[in-house]
Length: 165
Image 1 (spheres, rainbow, N blue to C red):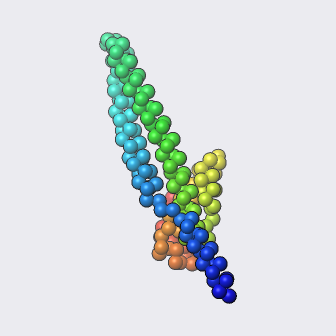
Image 2: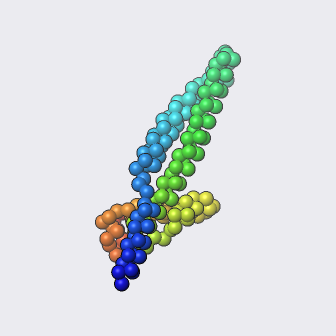
Image 3: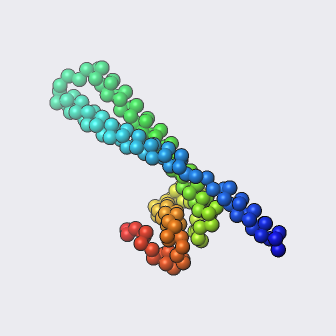
C-alpha cells in the first residue's frame, strides 16, 4: 500500500512540475497591448494628417515632394509597427492561453472541456473561431476562480461569472 501512495504522490508532484507561473508572460502581454494601443493612436493621428495632406492636394494647394515622401514614410513605418506588434502579441496571447489551460490541468482543475492544444487550435478554425475562443477563455476564467472551483459542476455552469451576450 505505501507503494501506491508513493506513486500517487509522484504523479501529483509530476503534475505540479508542469505548472509554470504566468507572471512574466502576462507582463509581456500587457506591455505589448499597451504599446500596440499607443501605436494605434499614433496611426489614427497620422491618418488625419494624411487626410489633411490629400485634402490640400485636391483643393489645388501646393504639396511638396518632401511632404508627400515624409507622409508616405511615416504611414509605412506605422503600418509595419502595427503588423509586427499585432503578430507578436497574438503569438504571446496564444502561448498565454495554452499555458493557462495547461496550468489548470496541472492543478487538477474540474472537468476541463478543452485541451491546451485545442484551446489554441480553435482560434484557427473558420466559423468555430467566432465562438470557441470565447468559450476557451471563459473556461480558463471560471476554473481559475478558487471560489467557483469548489462548487459542483451544476453550480459552476450557473455561476455569476457568466457574461451576458
